[in-house]
Length: 564
Image (cartoon, rainbow, N blue to C red; front, side):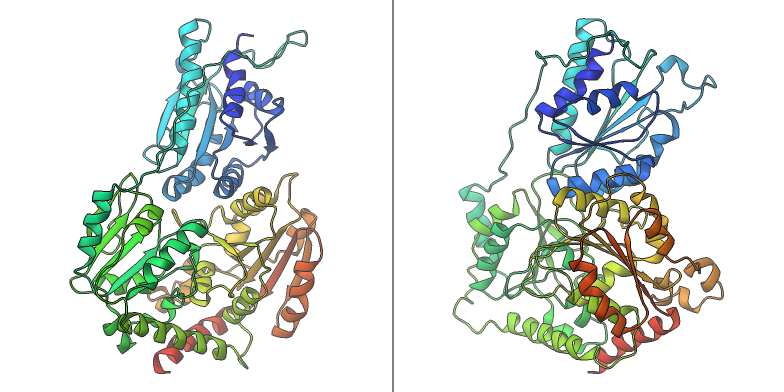
């Protein structure tokens, strides 16, 4: 076959143990579509909307840790991948992006579905390749095969991320009926060995010695997937000394004494925060949600910041970065010991943090009792109803902030996922669909109405998983703009910031064959939640609230803790 090297892309991906492929239909990408669709080891799905397709692929890769393969036709189809590519780049999720293209000589010649696709994702891609346009010569075939292996290896190399291969294709795109279709057996496969990124004994000893100068140490994990071995190592590291673990909800790191309500008590009006300031903060992972934590650490006097990261650029999130430690977090917390003389003491620094965390826990348990039903209280009850061993995807805007304030119910083994690479609302539903497809677990999306309706096409395909649950907190607009400083006091609030909308999701649920529930009171919510989870089949629960009451209640929440 003339396009044998294109057909063999699917075989190379299979030999690298990639399995998830999300195609978007088109003619120029037909050779790729046929190659993946006919491969027995590939799990191929077709999603017409390229933006939704890319986020679904992202969601599957978040769970599997292996690159999802994306395939689309030429033209603006490739641009529709851009939001998910950027999210994958900053969230460090592997994606392998194939875009079909016209040969170079036909670019800018007024031919259809033709744009400048070379390096189309700019600086938000680990690397962009251009496939050889003419594949008859043996060197071109060698080049093509080598390129695919290189792209796959690069997508998974730390820090993981998206890699793009642009494939110029000439007609004919479809094999003849009498043509024998097969994958080559003698393909060149290049594999890359993994690096453990461990500390040497000398490095561990030097870091242990360096820790002796610090009496008040915080450990702050950023966004990551659950890692029980790492969690145990951190717990042991902190337990023997006056060291505090502060965990956002997206850190998925919650040993017994983790501080999880810091977003509640680290307020400017809480006088106790002065005593909570550390000498050293040790971080790893990706982004941190809590604005209160970030502001608190940025204002901590004389703070030193050690960040653990095997490779890649390091962010100075707290404006205090002093040391970059090149190893895996498990290596650091297993090999480095704190010897600061506090092993047998009463651990006063930890005690201060535990006291504030306990105070916030009691406050939360009591605050929502006997209060008028509103958005924040609906989040409280929805969090308590999450099933054991399930996934929670929190959409951006207020959903992720509410969830971080409340924290997870204890001992449920719930994994929390959020698109906090770029923190956009544009792919939350699609990503959750990908999470559900790959995990097989009950997967719940907490989302606002704008984020949900923005990404409805994430449901527009033939693969809607029965384990998907979507809870829409519908306040008929972008309610966050009533809750943050600035826009709430502007005359343009309603139309230009909050963007009032009147849609509800019942027709969307009917369109996609999903069960639909709606509630407007606490009593209705309590009745609906059990059947929402217990019965089979994908479902939407829409919780209607009043935006003015939501804003007033959230203000009361903040003021109540500060005066408590």
